[in-house]
Image 1: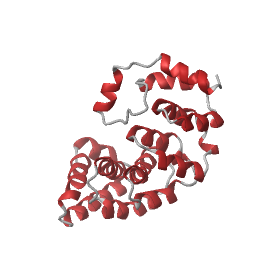
Image 2: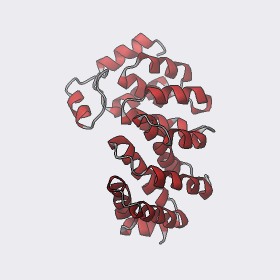
Image 3: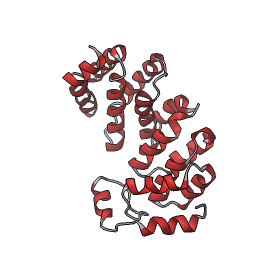
Image 4: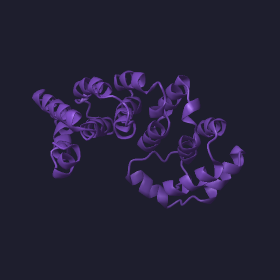
Length: 226
């Protein structure tokens, strides 16, 4: 199953046009989408298997579900810095951004440098990528040292004012996941949230207050041992 046209026809065959309404409800870009549930795309990905070359070709089609499929079948060991830059510039929907970060980008040697580069960018989805990488690293990179995340916290504090929907939610996500990683980082994340509140910037308050609600919850406190 390596022919692009055949795969696109397979995607179209499992599409549900009515599902486009649900995608749009969740603020997913449906300007070039078939309307396919993610579990069904994952099933197709399992049939295809890992294939970096095909992943790149699928991405170039521009179809929403083809790009999701590309993130599932790509081989992170073959992902280059150029690919990360190219795909990130193409992001127009939060779900593709998040899948690319979690499935591929965060597993590469470039993720830390891209955090700092993208978090300082102006474009909404490029900036989101920087903070999604932080969140994904906090969840999945179990061996990553605390110093990595300590370096990210000042960036979260600096950028918390950005009130654009897809940016602020990613900043909040990064702060929460960092604080749930362990006892030490929990305390550092709490301090970062308080520092954000001290800015007295109404646009930044939501990021801090929402993070504090979760970080101070019984479930999180029990998890991190605070």
